[in-house]
Image (cartoon, one colour):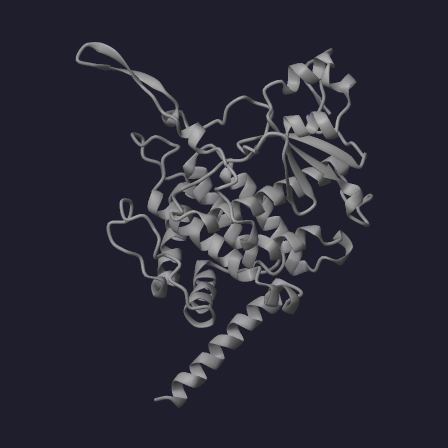
Length: 355
């Protein structure tokens, strides 16, 4: 609890609730009328479906319900009873566990959206919120300016363009991810837990207001993926090496080929992924993380090339890691890392033999 003054008492925002069913308001995901979208064990429903199939008439007419949710058109229903062994595993309560599941599920949806879109610069924003409109950076809101002595409106519809519709995502592309999300908590491997928590981190990244913060958090996600344990020490060179082997030896793929030409003056080559990612890391770590900020540069603005490079890298790495063969093969990230190095050693032997 937090106390301010002698007679003023403010309660900590989070309240532990150990029930087993929860319904959360969702902003930024548009569903057809009276429809349901099942993603793993989470059911996303539109308000009509909620009224007709889930909540009773008494709640629908309740003043508090109307006041809190009258502008919400989509809801997420989480029933923890679908998961075995869920009781008492989260010290912050079942409501916190339900939120983790929901964030991980939305993170999987972001991966499905990434797989469907032609350009990685095309984003959607799905938020657990009962607000009426998606929040965007200040410069992306509509505002006014003076042109030739007259006030003119500078409209911006970015918040509308960020709403995800059923044509925006490819559910087949994440079918192996959904199987992980549905797996009992007790039987998830450390490798699977790593994937789930990364998806939760991705949820928070997409909903971060400032691009300068997002680029830092993409680096955090990449660090988290490759960290074998809390004592594991490594740097950007370590990560760059793993990425080089993955995308140039194991799964040869031009992951930078669809980077927008209107942003990247020079095309990026995946064979140089190690140096490219290390360069982004140094920029983020040495400058922004250490407080090197130009006075006349708006704080929220970052180098969009760096943002897209590291965003694409994390998404493609997750797509690689969540192949069914690897999910079944690895118990933890250490095994994953050893597999990468074994493939590199094999590649070196083959190259020497062919000389």
